[in-house]
Length: 302
Image 1: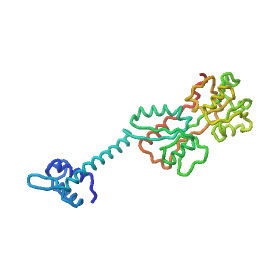
Image 2 (image 1 turned 45 degrees about the horizontal axis):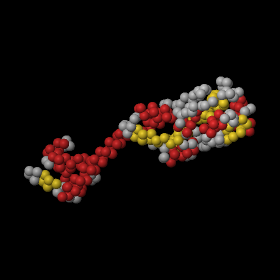
Image 3 (image 1 turned 60 degrees about the vertical axis):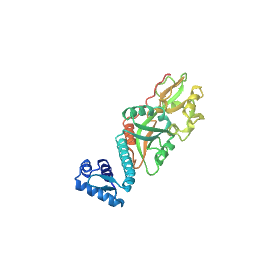
């Protein structure tokens, strides 16, 4: 037989009570059933654990040795069960999510704050990664899931769930000829110097599909949003950025003008297949699904 928590509790109860009848009542057993349980435990460990007399019960040397381990084992089991229950009930927990920077700095902090109010003892680890790295983190188990804009076919063993369609805005200086327009179409950008994101980016891919990359008057290609905004502020050119990327930024001497509604970037929740979430990860995933972002430009004024 294997030693169970019931065996350990019976053993420790007998040490405490020093009487079979009283110890049996603690476990809600009859005295014969309790005696049989102790006898089976002694048989399993291969040693007599108690010296029995008409007046009292004492531990044998082997019983004293076993007692040192039994109390610790039972406490560890109780702690383990309590920890699992706490995690399952979200009294405690930890989850990791990989999020693209344009969401991590704008929309996601509000999500974290709202989630923390509901589950104050759940720790959320945020990894702000570009899409490819965010998806790799979810694939490799370094994150429970990712929020990303995949530009390549999804690798086997991964699952995509469409989350949101993020629109784009044109960024230009306040004194620019386009600055007073309420909305713009891709062809409206053609006469002006353009600061481009890398060719593989979602923004450039969408623009290229509509107007052809050769027709844009690209004067610079930059990797980072802050670099682009600095160039626009200096009057080097105009550019295009996802609305969610702009929500964390205070535009100085610039305006954001909504671009054609048909130009969007699709944002996905990316998980392994099957997800195999902890309770904390499942709670955050569901909360995010229920709170998609508002992608309207934050402001046209500074």
